[in-house]
Image (cartoon, one colour):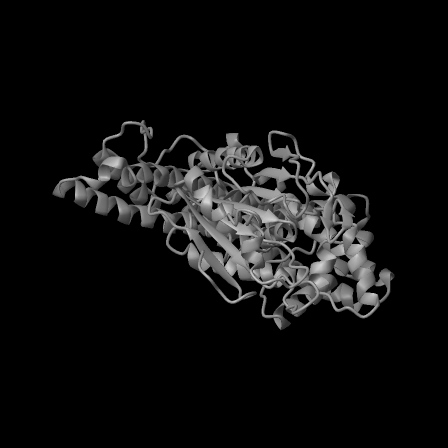
Length: 521
């Protein structure tokens, strides 16, 4: 492996085959003693000097590009001010650059100890972010956890004691592995929406750590090292290894290596054949199947090369150009502007009355105002609710259509891989060489298109969530208003209008102009 200054943040290319179909990214854990070469030593057997990422894994998964993330993981000496969130962001930035051309290539993460916390934080940051790195949590298929303290470790408490007697520790790293830590609890909560999107191999230590004649016991117990998922989602392994040796293998003939690598090969094979990656959680039956975007009747086995290329060209054309469903969506989206106008109109229509109520400090003044009847107001509120319901439905249709496009784009990517990386591609005539060149260009275009669709899906998903929340508030307001008389109704509306106005004023100060409001919330 390439040499690099200790603790420099970088993403090393351990193996980079030309026919790479998947990225495997390894992330090491804490460096307790500030030892040189910790990033490499994490995966290297002390007796044989073999780093399994470099010496064993490439032969087991020859189509995998293997990357190793190095960062300052020092916990006590020579520490960095960058904590878990910052190192996770560094990882995302490195991956974004490294995967710029082939961003739709599936991902498997491999992590030891605190490295697993950083992987989870990176996925959480990207998933809950602004969509910039949405492709990374979307296209991740599986994670291999070696002794990762999902619920913390009792050994962190000893580190906390050391800070009280004068030792300086990286506080962020320490909090991330403490038992009952608020930081760890927050990460667990934020990771929950994407927890079951992935497949896991959780490898648990069963032997105590012994060093310098001292017995340190089990560092991460079984309960903390597993996620508690069904066996179909989480393979749980219990090798005869300690926390420090759990991710080291001296030979490719070791039974532990054969077992672990067998499961990693299994999820890698599944990852490159899986096309239902999505930035959101959609039930399989919700994906429309009426349109296959030019891939009708095309299976991956025994397809003529020219037919694959033709099908992919049709797919890209269908995605980029206007289809019947796209026209319907665009027409519906044009109606959104009118729907927003309707909501705004209702608010403006009631505003003069609300201003009178807001200027009336005593409730009995309401009865002297010429206000619309309760029935009129409730009818207008129902119109607002129906409008909002329609907005939600439009967003859901758009998301499902994008999800279908992403599915077929990824499917086509897999088909092109078989064309480009076939064994016969090295001995071809001029026509075949031209076809391979065209296939490579289409392959890159598909990756870009998949990322574009993913980001668009991500943004529409966030918009849809906001619209759903607005709809719930409207419905809650309607339910609350049902039991009130006219006077109580207008007092409630006045109070909500005041809150809405304050919220709009705050948004304007923050440069965030809201498109619509609803005083029935």
